[in-house]
Image (cartoon, rainbow, N blue to C red):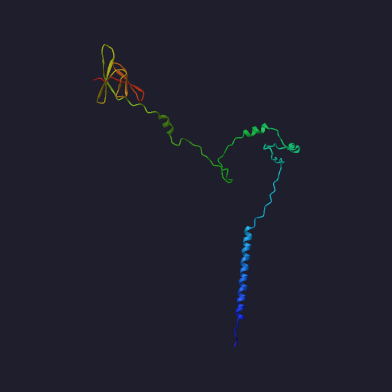
Length: 206
């Protein structure tokens, strides 16, 4: 008969504790590694700028607040070319751009072929537009059917407008629109005031 003591339980508890500590240690280590990898700044890239022309030294700040002129050395002055070339300027100004319709933002685009117009898009549209103008004034709606004259003096004309009869002398306005300009034995001149148009109406024989 084997007697069970408390030593076996203590061993199991100790093993479990050791395993738990190892697992916790591994988890913490992985977490620290991930955090360190994310916060590590990328290496700086060294850039080299080639200078083909001498660069003038930066002007020093003036203590009095005024702008200081840049001082150039003799060796730098020898490399400068202050000569003005009018022929170069004339050649640049004489250049004219002649586009061919190609898309300048695409290296593989072909020139666009623009067909020339053979004729007007709408035949007769231009002629109709030229023919159109201000509308012609309407015909004066009056009828001259007689006049009255005493001793060869001032004449009075008899005018018919619809069913209304008017007796008017030179200068009178008929129906608030028509002005009598001249009265002759066989015709009368009437001005259409709104249109500023004068028409001659013949005498209508009974």
